Length: 387
Ligand code: IFM
Picture 1 (cartoon, rainbow, N blue to C red):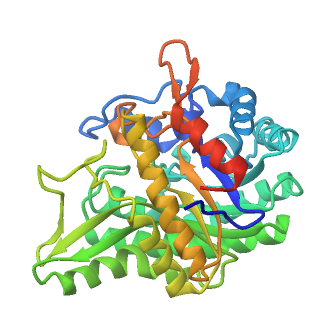
Picture 2: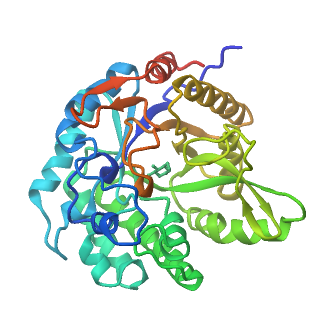
């Protein structure tokens, strides 16, 4: 049955600066990739050289049929030293935004996507109570400089992940394994979101939200209490913080089962994707319903996708996720758009370049791009506004 989407639906694809630009020497991740014991598979180096190749990348996204492109601004480029702003870096992001408009692609600008300047890390990182203010200052300055060129903004991508991965699991910088530190950092990210929302909103007039990493959680073998505990600290405190936002960005990929001992990784027989996650397109609708139910806010799917080398599997995954998303619309949930993660095969953090989420592949030696069948297929869905 053909499913049409509302007029004006945002059909897009997303990237983040660090994962695609290359050469982000000023970022805490650049150091982390090389830190002994960080467990990173490989350094990001030139990434996809999107810093220079963005004009043709945005032109390709537009030509495929997408009307939206979500990308992020690298804080360490814009403010390489505390309080010192780079006009050249701001000029670069201005040109990116102008290119989007020339290509009739609506930009969605993210102000923080996992990386922070090295000087922030040196000053105590996200545990330092001064960091939220510093972040909001950068957001205000940048939004003012770019005002008029964007009307949708995300303060922080997945503010729930650096606290978990960097302060409790130890696999993101600064590599701590301290559950108490995670809670402090959770609070600092929430404060940063509130301050940044106000700063970006008043400087630019854009609609502002966060993009939250959500997972469909399912209790098994009596894991209900554990599920509630995990969900509270991982999602609910952030959804509560999003209640005054203009929209909630949902990033969703998979399901986790939760037993009394905690999260259970899928067993060997389960169908898994590149990061070991359960192949579970239905997770998207479950998370959209939950985000909307808890906040009552309009939802934008700011990330959904699959890491796989099998592009047919990618199409199947997206088709199933979109069909469920259409059900959410039919239930009356205000879903404003679907942004596939990711436009390009890019740097997947501690996993390096192995996992492939992109609609467009990138030759790691020549930087040559090749659109995958999934890119053409989803672009056509976007063009027709119809699944
Ligand atoms: O690549 C990441 C992205 O940076 C944040 N959300 C999940 C993606 C896939 O792991």
